[in-house]
Amino acid sequence: MSGARSKGAEESAFLAGEIGVDGQATEEARDEVELEQAKAAEDLTRGRTYLGREFFAWVIHRTNSTEPLVVVDDEPVTALCVGGLTLRGLTGDATEIVLKGTTAAYSRLAREAMIDGLLPHVIRLRLSHGEKVYEATIDAEHLAVRSAKLPALLSEAADDKITERLFLAETLSRIVDAAFRDFLTLRASPRWSAEVVPELRAWMFSEHRG
Image (cartoon, rainbow, N blue to C red; front, side, top):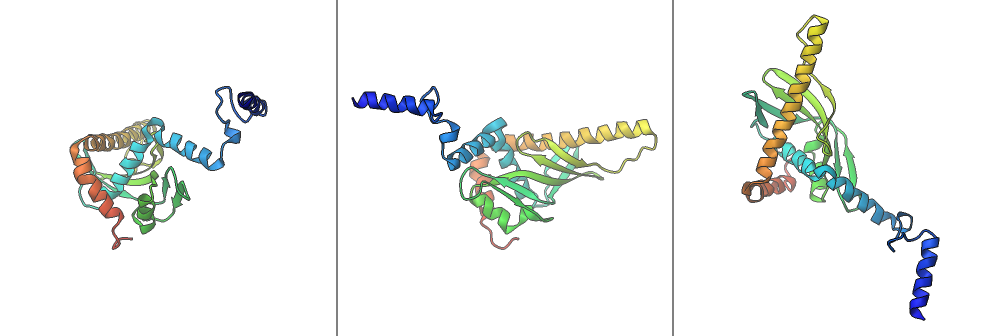
């Protein structure tokens, strides 16, 4: 009898839309917190987004030093995080935090958010490459440039301006790609866990900054 009751309850739940054909709860019946966490997990892992977020955390830490972020076309590229910062995570009271301010990425609030498991998802970088200075807002999901400010154009003719603008945009893309490649090489090496992670954690827990 208990089996019949169980089957009847299952059929009733199916007809009510509470479970699907696989016997699992439908999204409508699932707890809102569970849904939010599942969505955050999906967003985090889609397209290896977590690597993009780790990359951004590494970039923020690296820009605290005077060392170049990467070398492109035999020219060093120095970077500085400017403007606001968006951080996202999987669990906790908040799964997304937006910080505003010209030095938001270096603030105590940003470091505390990272300690709590949130990682940078959208950052804006000022990139100095030789005498040229770029600014770019980049998201972690696709490492795509959402908006950019290119160096001033030197060409005067309209056609030449178009060509120069395309060249500068392509250079900006190559700078971002080169920095990410260097990060991936480091991320896959023993140095990541032995040296970089302890450095990142020491920086996150530091109290004399911000």
